[in-house]
Length: 197
Image (cartoon, rainbow, N blue to C red; front, side, top):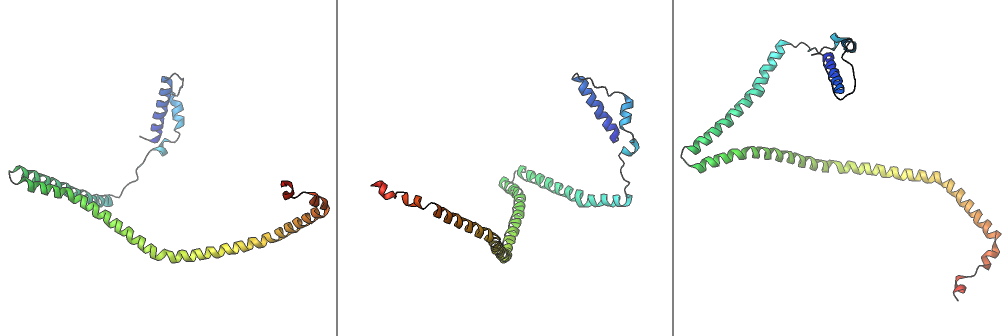
């Protein structure tokens, strides 16, 4: 089904839903739906043609590389299960069949544990390698940023120095002016020690 037909179906379903809940929506006119799909030939889904030779080779490879090993594994597991049941029901030593079953249960866990152990070993090796490689590089980087910090601080001090000098000169003039304009106030204020007595 093309995309246009699918859209028409969804639109009709939408109109049916709204008419069911009491909202009057009229989209049933076929002319309106045809106007929605003005280019139906371009909207049709087309599958690109495949090369039959490579497709056949791919099917053979998929069978021999995926399906056949999977089928062999399933048959081997089923054979081992049948052999275990047969050995246990034969009236022989049941503990030997139980031990064999336990071995078959442990083998997948051991395989997964070995995989995890290999991943852990690779991570440990990577961390040790990084610990040998990164500290000298980070020391160089830290030294660079330390020199950059000192340079930026010196430049900021040089930029701020004229402003601070102007501010300090202004503060000095204001202090001098206030001290010269009100000498009586400084002498008339009683000492804190005399107030306590």
